[in-house]
Length: 115
Length: 111
Image 1 (cartoon, rainbow over the protein chains, first blue to last red):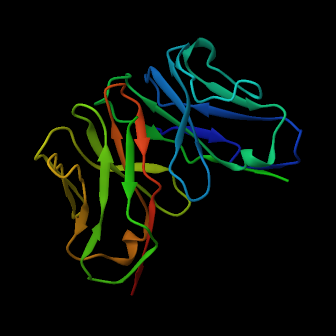
Image 2 (image 1 turned 45 degrees about the vertical axis):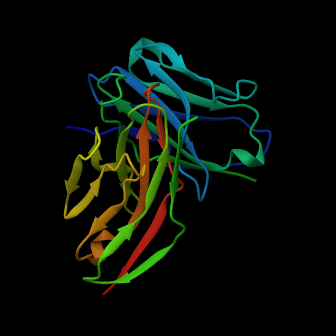
Image 3 (image 1 turned 45 degrees about the horizontal axis):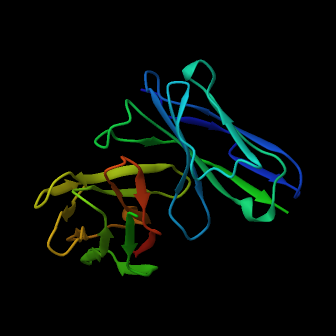
C-alpha cells in the first residue's frame, strides 16, 4: 500500500515570496491533516479536512496561509507572503476517518527555509 | 487545553543499554496515548498506542503503560540497538480527537 506522498521535499525561498506544498493521501482515507513542525518542537495541527470540507482550521494563520482539498483527495497548502518564522517542516497526514482511535499516517514532510 | 510533556534530551546510550523516556500528559477525560518515532530522513510512524488506563502498548521491543493515576506514558526498551536511533514523540488524542504532540526527544545509540 502506497503511503502519504508529499512534494517538494525541500524548498528555499526569500521572505515575502509565495510557496505551495502538495499532498496525496493514502487511497480511501477521508481525513487529511496539515501540520507545522518547527525545529525542536512537536508537530502542530494547522488544518484538518474531512473529505473536501474543513473540520478544524483554528490554528491556521489565515492572513497568509490557505489550504484546499479539491475532490476530497489531493491537497495543497499555500503560504503567501512567507515570513522568516514560517521556516519549518510541513507534514501531511491522513486517516481512514476522523475518530480519536483512527491512526494517522504521515508523509515525509516538506522542509521550508525562508531567508 | 491538552498538553504533553516529555523529558529533556538528547539521550545518548550504548548498544544493549536500558531505555526509559518519560512522558506525562494533561487532558480532560480519558485520552488515547501514543508514541511516534521519526527515523532520519523518514516520516513520523506510529510506534505503539494505548487507549485506556492500565493498557500496555508494545512494538519492536518497546513498551509503554497508560498510568492514569500518574498521568504518564513512559517509553521503555530493555536493550536498545543502533537502529533505534531516532526522534521519539509522545502524543495524545483527547475529547476533540485532535492529536497533540510533545516536543520530541532525540535518541542516539552508540555501537
